[in-house]
Image (cartoon, rainbow, N blue to C red; front, side, top):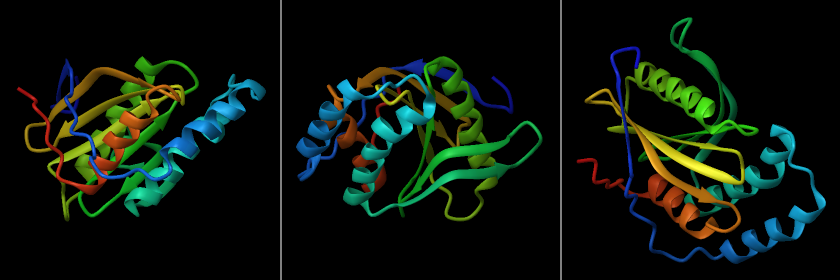
Length: 183
């Protein structure tokens, strides 16, 4: 890995939010209802139909700030647009949308998280968290800012099948101190 960071692939045992998710059933139903009628062959279709509804409800639950297509430039190698940058008082979460190739998407996500780590100087979090998604499949990663360690999660979450655990992880990331067993 470049820029002085190391990569570890492992299961990330995320703590899940335990509170009520008052719109989760409606979110699942809306996605289930529209899937038979839409072609998801483009990234924009996946963003509009699958990713945006999840993010809208995530903002409902967390009241976090969101930036869409947020430009970042640290160096010539660490620059680009973040598909979604979600900021709460506790955390930064980057979401990278991809049409299909999650491996390439994760590489892009890591570069974005490293760029944020190198750019952020005030109110710096211990971790920068990220998710790469095709809309139907979500995978997580994180950067430990102190140790320059990048973790790529081995677990995948499917939409709409795993929408509730996915949302519980996302809400927990943005509303509480994250707790992970990284050893």
